[in-house]
Structure formats: C-alpha cells, structure tokens
Amino acid sequence: MILIKLGGSIITNKEKPLTANVPAIKQIASHLRKVKEQYMIVHGGGSFGHYWSIKYDMHTKPDRYSIKGVSVVKNSMVELNKLVLQSFLQSKLNPYCLPPTDFIFGNRAIIKKVKEISKIADAGLIPISYGDVMWFGKNKFYILSGDKIMGMLTRILKPRLAIFVTNVDGVYSNIKAKKLIYEITTEKPTITDVKMDVTGGMSRKIKEAMNMSKSGTNVFFVNGKTPQRIVNAINGKEFEGTIFRG
Ligand code: IP8
Image 1 (cartoon, rainbow, N blue to C red):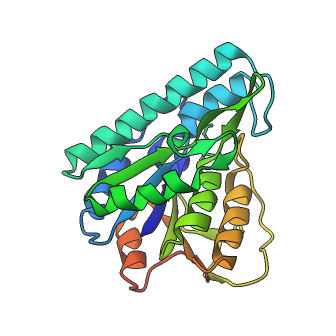
Image 2 (cartoon, rainbow, N blue to C red):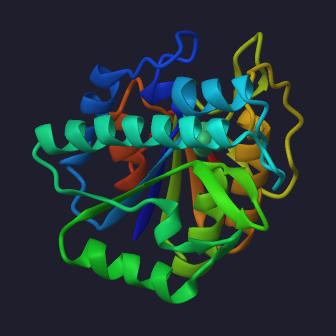
C-alpha cells in the first residue's frame, strides 16, 4: 500500500478562490496509471476549503463555529473532491470516494474501517479521501487536514511509502534561495513558511512526515508539476525531492 497526498497547492490555484487546477490533476492521474501497486489518495483543500475556512474563521481546534461556515466549507470540499474523482475517471482510473467521515469518528480513526480501505484498494479501486470539516460532538466542529489523515492512516495501514505532492520540489532549508534538503533523518529541519493556511501549511506536513517516518514508513515530498517524480519515487528510481527515511 502507498499513500499519496495531493496538496491543495497543486490541485488548485491557491491565489484564486475556488479554482481547481484540473490540468494538473489530470496530468498526475495519467502518470499514476503507470503505478501497479495499490495506493490511496488524500487531497487537500487549497483555494476551496481553506478559502472558506479563513472567511468563516474556522480552525483545527474543535469549537462552535458558524453553522453556515461548516456547511459552506463542507460543500466546497465535496465540490473539489468531485473534480478530482472526475479527473481520475477521465484518465481511465477507478477512483472510489471515501470521505473522512467514513473512517474517522470525532477525531479518532476507526481502526476496523481503516483496515477495510486496503481491501477496497485490493479490489482494484483507488480510495480517495480529503481534508474536511468534521463533526466533533457537543455542537463542535473542526477542520481536519489531509496531512493529519495521512498520519492516522500510516499508523494503522503501515504503508510501504507515503508521498506528499506539492507545487515545490520538496522541503527547502531556505525558501528564498530554494535550497532543497534531499534527505531528512532525525533532525526536524527549520524552515520558513509563508503560506496562508488554516491547517499549518508546510510546517504541519513536515511534522506529520517526521512522525510517519519514525513509525517506519519512508516519506517523500515531490513536485506534482513534474508527476514522473511521483512514479520514480514509487519505483525506487532516482528522483528530485526530499525523503524522510523511515
Ligand atoms: O489542505 C484542509 O485540508 P489540507 C481541508 O490537507 C479544509 O490541510 C476543509 C480546509
């Protein structure tokens, strides 16, 4: 099993509210046709979920947020997910929509349900989940990042590898000079994060990747603008990007 996170930065135009980057999604999907191993996709919110979460002041902390906001954020993620599903179908792949509410209750993964995901993948489908606004109980909701979902799934499914696909080459030690870190073992790198993001942007991804690699999974960061790098990472070929060694 392989877990692939398609970041909002690559599947949407982050500068333009509610704009999906459909050509990029299709380009990634067509490259994924070369992958012969089972895999699952988790995608982020980009200029859909994040745009509305910011507007309605909603965050990852469970709270009594605007009910209208909950409804609008949820709907925007369903819309983006639909575009991802359609792009996969048009690329002759067989996606299977799996909202996080299918395997997460409150803020905890339902182990039995998560284990079932591998069987869905074994059956030949590509499960596709996404960051979302989640019911927490007691009239509280929270924004769940797709990165967090990646961590939860890794703990239970123990994938062979996990890949974070973004619109940059990997983890930069210096974002201005675009100095790429090729390999990260034990030390958490210090990076400067500039993106406006309710779930923590690159810092959250790195934190999640560190924990995932500690549990034994190799975690890669690659640029989705060159999707062959995703395939190369999977096939163990040389690729441009960052690896967190498990
Ligand atoms: O882009 C965020 O998911 P992420 C989902 O993976 C929402 O952090 C609803 C903003």
